[in-house]
Image 1 (spheres, rainbow, N blue to C red):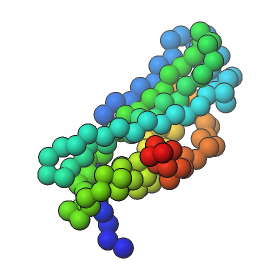
Image 2 (image 1 turned 90 degrees about the horizontal axis):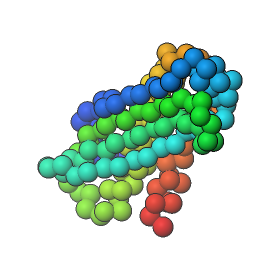
Image 3 (image 1 turned 90 degrees about the vertical axis):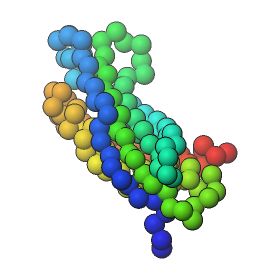
Image 4 (image 1 turned 180 degrees about the vertical axis):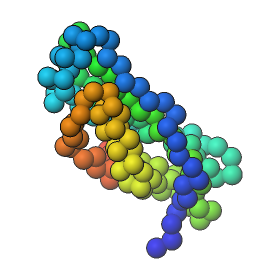
Length: 140
């Protein structure tokens, strides 16, 4: 199978761990199992068949508690699309599915390290992201 894209580079554009005070930290430490991981993928075309892809992970409490922490990472990938790829749906699949399957294990490891170094050790992301499903939801 011919690879339809090449990762030219990737890097952490922004990483954030915010806990406002000790009371919030203690509350979050007890309730971090209620936090949910959200992912957002955006892209913008560059020149020469290159695309900048932003993969944003947010780990947050959806409840309206005043005591909460915020964790977020913005991970940038610059890819070049193969000349034979012309269809916009195929390009979307590369961005939302194929690229994410290639880079997500690294992003997840970085994100779990961020949580650990922020004082929230032992956090596990139980729900794995199905990028094929995500792609199919976006094209419908």
